[in-house]
Length: 443
Image 1 (cartoon, rainbow, N blue to C red):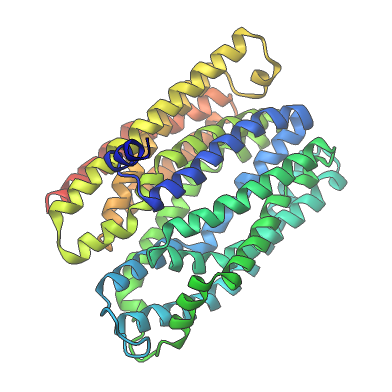
Image 2: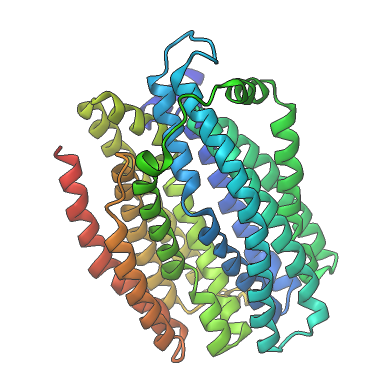
């Protein structure tokens, strides 16, 4: 039995890192499913709208993170692939380059965390005060705590990115799995205990405590960061010449991504009300979880993909990517179909939870966009592993089109809002991305 399981894991390309990452994504699916039941049972339609608008506004951190975590992971993966086996930490040029990068980025993230907290707090307070469907006493405290805890987790994020780049993708996924399980369980307890929106910051608080303990209490992490701290700065990375030309493009792409994917719930919140925003937010959360599970294969393979590129091994690179692409898109498609069938059954059985989601027609449109975005994500991951950001013009164009279309469509209805996004994704972004990708894959 064990041999058969190992055989199928090999066929599917599942090792420790992929398996742990998939467990994390799988838990996200389960947690999202429980939230589908918990939110309608414990929050009013207006509170549900506030809950998901909270989540959308937290995406503002991309304007402060600036794509640096992905860059850190790729830099670390490349330097670790090229380092001299057995070299002492002070003599290893590649280890020194990683250490100098960490030193610089920790200073930036300290400042970025503070700036994010202030901007998020003020933006949220302005938006929620304008709506007025809930008294300030009900949302101000939870939003203050959530913004503060998210800022601290933003500060921790580059350390985890370095750890992943050093080949410990599975270990970081296991960390996130543990903190997510505890955090969600505490959130559910709070919701069913009647805490309302005050239960929402608990997940972020658990992440702070768990990550802090993990970074300080794991021997392999201590050894890793001990070596990096001892690394000399004489071989420091020239950020302006080696990284910035690539990194700023990722930053603009990710900021464009926020405009493309995260603004729908706040726009609906403003134009159609908190209840409509809650329906859309819950639906998007479900499909986002499905997409996250699908792209787990891509995320887990970033170190290997980057390593093959550094070594010039195009044959193994393309072989690995093709296998990863089929598995990721296949899983995303199956998940979207399963959700649509489940919601159809909920409507047939007249379950009230179905009323907290968007209409099936809108859901089908979101599902098509989710599958398209998984394909785009995989192609972008492949291209960015080359140390370049060809998606910049694609992302900026799509962001401008989506923002304009969604702003107008959100005044009409939720279906029109999501239809505009899906059409732009499938008609503009997907063909453009495919053209760029084929150019890289034929190198």
